[in-house]
Length: 64
Image (cartoon, rainbow, N blue to C red):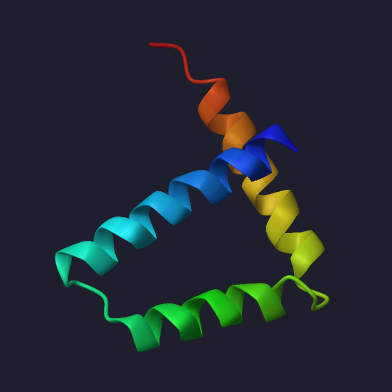
């Protein structure tokens, strides 16, 4: 859950910066938000969640 919440916060910050910088307009931003909302209710949601969990675990295991 902590990974999911932090990803949401990071993506919200990126969306805000893109809107403020003029890189992304309001209409496409709303479409992107709605797409993510509806994608979360499909059968792909568990696969996406597993992929993001494995990606986070892989990044976490990297030793510098």
